[in-house]
Image (tube, rainbow, N blue to C red; front, side):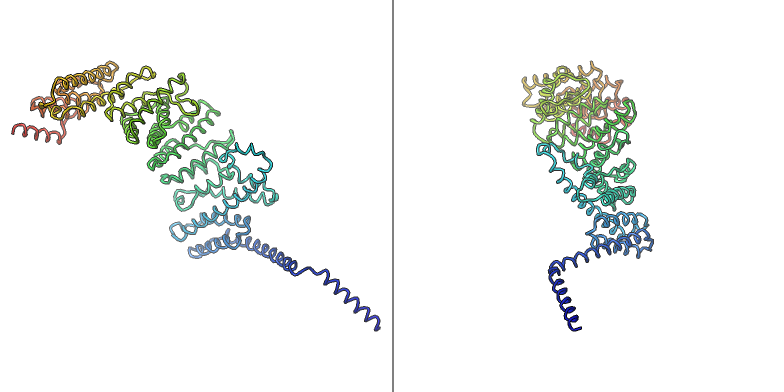
Length: 589
């Protein structure tokens, strides 16, 4: 028995020694305990996540209870389970959707929590998708040659990177991959919650930009609903984000899918809002979008009325774009190219628009800018042959524009306004060579140049009809030359049927009065009473004031009668009548 006990004790000692030898070091033992703790914590988190999902889906509390519960859930999602992105972004869409079911939009605390939840969800989602995209890009870059990488377009390849990165990620299994795709689609479904009343509080535009940039494809109804709810487009950044998202969707859609059609009135409103702030990039995006829609609609049906309704810029959109590019100072080639396109589409720029455009061109820099614009027009005609199907061509990488009547009128008006009447007349003489036909605005701007030349060069005493010490033969000869030039301009306009244009007639009347031929101006008005266009009241008033300065009150009464015959029943304005009375009393004294 003693021997057996000794043998058992020896065997027990040997087992203990073997266990000591096989026992892992302290570090490994601690590591195993940490792993077990981590696995347990992950299980508890997933269990708590499932509980939170159930709680979030069944949240139907009162105002105080719901607001506090939503804030508590948001803190748990953001901080307690941040190391489990799948669970985190399974909870976010459910929580965000629960906000739309509540009727607490008037509560500042509710709006604050809702906005905070949306911003936190989008920020976290963007970080996770960018992380997956970086891993996916690294794997793809190892398989490609360095030469091919230099030709990659970042904007085009960024489309579908989110879903593509999830699908191509080497460390993501099939189950986890499908979960991430479902998460992106869940966020895409949240875009349907957009309403006009919630657009200011909830960043739907940012959500659409993020989802579209990472492969999401919301339907045209959902995307265009967000576009409409963003009215009145007061933020340039938001407008640019909307246009970029719609352009990406339009580029990525298949030919069988419907187009993302934005009506021209909405585009014009967008352009108007960003133009007020001097931003031209959104306007460039509008033109890119309309070009994409035009190509897509032509592929479907060339005779479709949608082509002219959605892909043809309106006259207002043309004017906004032209004025915006003119204000930038280095986009004159686009200005004149758009003027040519505007005429091609059948729009005729108004005189006031051309006048404002010329004022913008001449005030942004010196006369050299006008000379450079004229050089572009001339050189484009010399370097190319006229193409009836296009108003602009590419030459040596630069956009060359064909001359148009509106472009030449704009330059002529700018020359006239700075007193360069010789250059304005020189430009008029080149109309035939540049294959352009003058219109009524052409002759009106020419007459303005002659008037500007006369009214700024003659001594003031001579303008008022009084004798001047400078009234010598040279001055009279110069005046006759200027008057003959104005007569020639008016005769040419009359031959082409523009003699009754009120702007042309008004400038001609002022010129005749300034050179002392007031009676001729009066007779001219009398001859044009039966013209096709109503004479401006300002023309009668200017002639009446000129006659009053000469003391011819009978002629003033005749002009008042003519103004009433022209359709102005009350005759001259009260201010002009009072001024004539003061002049008459001064002359009598």
